Length: 475
Image (cartoon, rainbow, N blue to C red; front, side, top):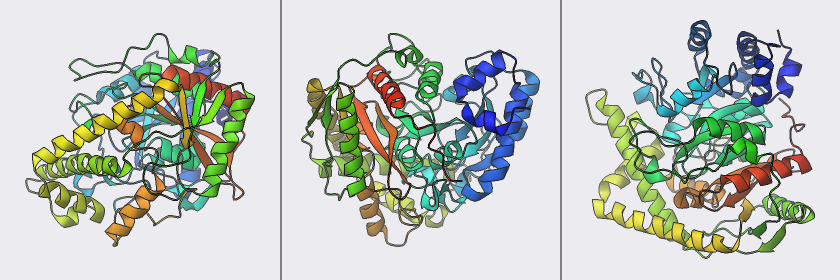
C-alpha cells in the first residue's frame, strides 16, 4: 500500500509511472484516494456523488493501457455523462436521471486508463462562481473553510487542493476552471474553443463559450490530459486548430522571449482589490526577470454591451436546460424547481424574441475579433484572474433573495475571465501568489486563439521559477 505521504507528492503523470513500473497497483491508488476522501471530504464537501462501485468494476474488468493507467479521477457533476450513473448539474430535477451513455469526453477519460470514483460539486447548472446549492450544500475552500472554493468547478478544485487526487475534471463557460483554480491555489487552463468535445448529445456549450478540461497541481498533468482528450469527434460542428505536437512535449520547451501585455483594468466598472493588483505587478516583475518584455496595455472593449450579450446567451441556455430537465418528469418547469437566480434567468429568456439572441451573438463575435486584433501585438495578456480574494461563503449563491445584488456582486467578482470564453482564446490561472491572510491570489494568462503551446511553455517556466507544489492548504 502506498503511503499517503508518498501519494501526495506525486502528480498524475508520476502516479501513472509508478503503476507502469509495477511499484504500485491501481487498486492501491484507488484505496489511497478513497481513504483521503473519507478523511477530508466531510470538512469541505467537494465530492457529492460516490462512484466507488463504478471504480471497482473498472478495476475488475481491466483498465485500458492509456497514459493515465490506474490514476484515480473525479468527474464534475456537470457536463459529463457517465453511463449508468446520475449527473445532476446541481439540480433537484435531475437527481434521479440515470444516463444511458458516456459522453465523448468520458469515453476519452476511460480510454486514458483512469479510475472514476465520484463526481464533484457544481452550483446549479454552473451558473455562479461558488459551489453552493440547494441539492448538495456548500463546498468549502481548503485554505479557509469559511471562504468559497470557487465555481462552477469548485468541488473539483477543493478535492485537488485537499490532496484527494492530483487533477480533476472541470468545465469553463465564464471562468469556471480559472476561478476555482485561483481560489484554491491550482493550475487551471481553459483550452481554445472546441479543443475538447462536447458530444454526443451537444455540439457546444453556452453558444461555444463553455469547454471541458481540468484543474491540477502540476502543469504537465494538464498538458498530458489535454493530449488524451483533445480533438474533434465525428459530427462536431467545428473544431480548434490542429495541434502540431503533444502538449506534454511543449512543457519541456523554453517559451522564448514573449511580448506580454499587463492590465489590471477591467472592461466593466469593477473595483479590483489591492492584493489582486499587487499580485499581477509582482508576476510582471518575475516575467521581466525571466527575460520577457512586459508593458501595460488594455484591450478597448464595450464591456457592458458584451456582458449583456453574454447574459442573453447564458439565460437562453439555462432556460433550455431547465425545460429539458422538467420534460423528463412530463411537465413544464416551476419556479420552485430551481434556485432563484436561475428562475430569474428563465423568465428573462422567455421575455425576449429570437432576434435578441442573434444580435447578442453578433456582439459576442465582434468582441472576439477585437481581442484577436489586440493580440496581434502580444503573445500573452496578463491580468488578475479575480477582482477579489476568495469571497466568504453565502455571498454569490443562486438562492440569494436580493437578485440584483447577487448579479452586481457576481459580475464585480469576475470582470476578467468571461471575455476569453467569448473570444474562444486559451486562458490559464497560474498560482504564484498568496496574500498575507494565506489565501491564493491567481494571475491569468491569455494567449492567441489556438495557442495552448505558448501557455504551457510559459506555465512550465513559471512553475520552475516559483514552484507552488509546496504551498499546502492548511486542511
